[in-house]
Image 1 (spheres, one colour):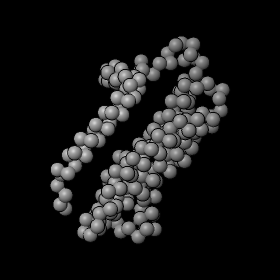
Image 2 (cartoon, rainbow, N blue to C red):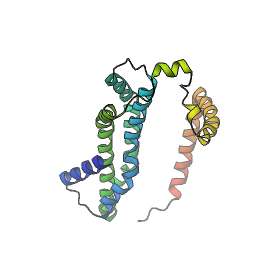
Image 3 (spheres, helix red, strand yellow):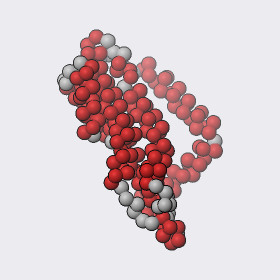
Image 4 (cartoon, rainbow, N blue to C red):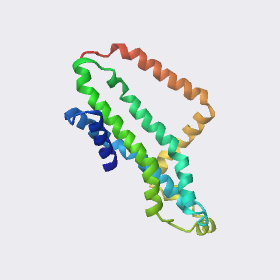
Length: 196
């Protein structure tokens, strides 16, 4: 969060965006989303350090973890920024009011992306340890992560996994469902109020 906020405020100064209520509100809105990429990266590094052979060099394990999740993190942050794109098109009073918010959210999310793919793997490599010897886990057969999950997570996975497998097998149905939801959204959109 500090890195993303610092990046956003420096970029605001560079682009001439004033620190008003709306631009600072954009930082407040983005606070929760700023940490997502770094959390995903750190969790994946931790998982691979836990699951891989300890003879594999740490930097290779961390690099592999980074490669696995870098693209999903990029897509997730891009989607968040795309959500705010309509605010860039506003004109007049509305534009002056809401455009700084969109700029600061986009800048903060870009800063969080830089931190997640550049700094988070380095910090993970420096501070994370392998929690348990890989060979001990394989010998004991206790390598299952699901067995250590809380009961509520296991219950949710019990329902989620069959649904996930169904939609992976029936991809056309998942696409059809997404297109149907988009069509409903487009049908309802003209009924929404447009006044500022």
